[in-house]
Length: 124
Image 1 (cartoon, rainbow, N blue to C red):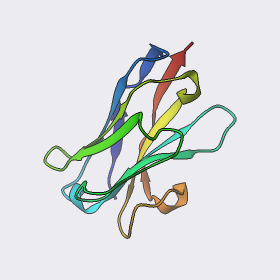
Image 2 (cartoon, rainbow, N blue to C red):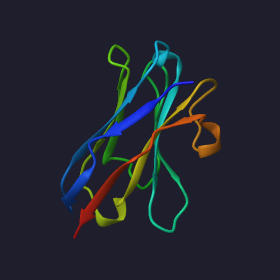
Image 3 (tube, rainbow, N blue to C red):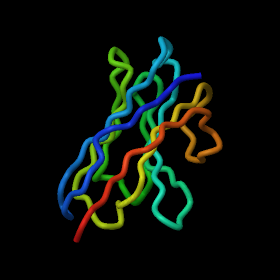
Image 4 (cartoon, rainbow, N blue to C red):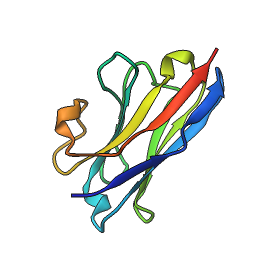
């Protein structure tokens, strides 16, 4: 089991950028597939982006393709989510998650470890 801690959220205006970080404890970070999910008020938790163990493969929700970029630094045990051209529809609590085996999946149930989340609010 690993522990995850997100940071980098905040209140921004539409069109701005933010970079979220997720620091992961433990010595086996490179063995985990990582993902970012978000949950808006009254909505279910939704997949945003995922990245393979090496960082060579990524996946994105259609709603963020071309605007968001996921990356990881296995030497720093950290995964990032660069978010550009933010819109009010991106407002949500953003969670990072770890999956210990297999491939990048988009369902929350496929991930076994979660961070507490960081709030992103985009004003119009």
